[in-house]
Amino acid sequence: MFPTATTNAAGRRIHRAWLVAAVTFLVLVASAAFRSSVGVLILPFEQDLGWSRSAISLAVSINLVFYGVTAPFAAALMERFGIRNIAALALTLIALGTGLTLFMTEAWQLAISWGVLVGLGTGSTALVFGALVANRWFVKHRGLVMGILGAAWATGSLVFLPLISNVIDSFGWRYASFGIAVMCLALIPVVWVVIRDRPTDIGLRPYGSSAAITAEEGSTNSTHSALSAARTALSTLAFAAKTRAFWLLAGTFFICGWTTNGIISTHFVPATHDHGMGATTAAGLLAVIGIFDIIGTIGSGWLTDRINPRLLLGIYYGLRGVALIALPILLGPNIDPPLFVVMILFGLDWVATVPPTATLCRQIYGTERGTIIFGWVFAAHMIGAAFAASVSSVIREQFGDYATAWFLAGALALIAAVAALLIPRRSRAGAPT
Image (cartoon, rainbow, N blue to C red; front, side, top):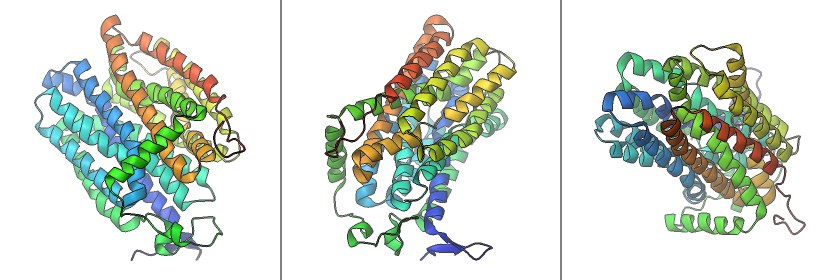
């Protein structure tokens, strides 16, 4: 069996939780990078295959919907069948879907391979995966770990885009797709060796916990069927839908998805191309967002342990709204200092919303149920992204540019800033008010 702890140079034992978190970080980085690479593939698909931007954006929207809706079911499946099993299956789906793009000749095939298969795979290794690991393996520094894992998701979405863009420019988009599939398959044995479903599976307590290990905590119930897992996810949604807190959490995260994955990740490169900027240069700007997101999301995790999460969300969405409204005014063929500042601002609050949102789900609904509810909240995030991907494409075709789409996204972010402050607390009876 893989050792439960390692020893550093000072002779101190490192809790296995940190090793599990490190591999989770790698999986999140990889799956996010693979899913978001379509942002730099839109123009190559248009040029090489002759497809319209709307047809490609439809495949992206399908991907985002499956990505989001899969999350709560994946959380329930991980509860039933284990984190390791579902993560390995998800990586297999991503590799299969990406590999099949090498053989496509029609736009509907992109919708199946990228939209459905990659959407299912990445949805199973999304932020809910990170939330489950953080909640099970950590008591101390839980918010910080959630911030680190949230940063992994955004970093993978953005930082690797210049590399993928360079591969496309030098060798063609098929080489990029093939490389993604191979790297995804290479992660599967790492996941299998390192990750365990719960610390009690190997006789450990969660990091920072002094409570005794119980048999209930140490078991992962794998006797239930996938149908039972689906029922758990749906019954949890039915419970949450009766509460005002859920609709505010889901509504703000819907807007979060609209203003990040939906419009930035999908349409930023094509939008900058309209203003005369090269694809690799634009991908570099997205990488700036990814780099500063590491600071912003880890910092947000640290702050979430100390400050009211509702206040943090209000600040994050407000700053994002201002940046989105400023963006179309600043876009041009060159990277001027004001545009660079806006990219930094995007980075600092890109996934900074995740730690406070996940924490609110846990505080209001409890750890286990809250994880599944966070999955549904995350589903709203990706549905918002799917709407934004399609709506922004229609706006571009109707008006000839993306300006209206940027202004709409900015206005929605400002609405979310107000809504976040209205999220209620747990009532005395233990249910949301």
